[in-house]
Length: 88
Image 1 (cartoon, rainbow, N blue to C red):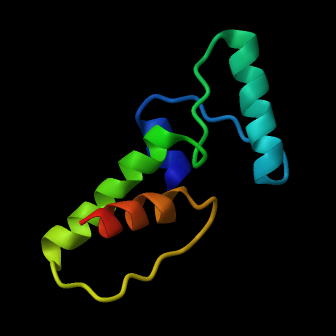
Image 2 (cartoon, helix red, strand yellow):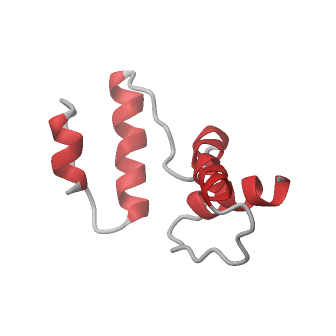
Image 3 (cartoon, rainbow, N blue to C red):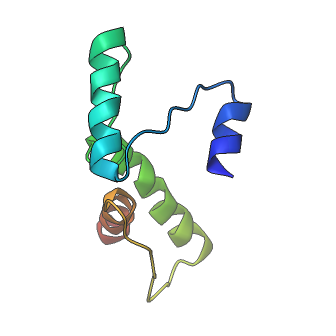
């Protein structure tokens, strides 16, 4: 579904490697070669800040929330939500 949605917005999707590290290395190489902007998917302050908006939405909908369960991949989503929740 993510691939289809991304392509539906007109993006070219390039799948590379067998793991995240290989894909990130290829993305960085591609950016260097083409002049494209490389935005790290989870180790980027702006990405983490954007993810924090999910925490704000949770607090807006459930102001007295006690527990939030989240999946952890690269950690960007968790970091952003945790910072937003903690700040409030």
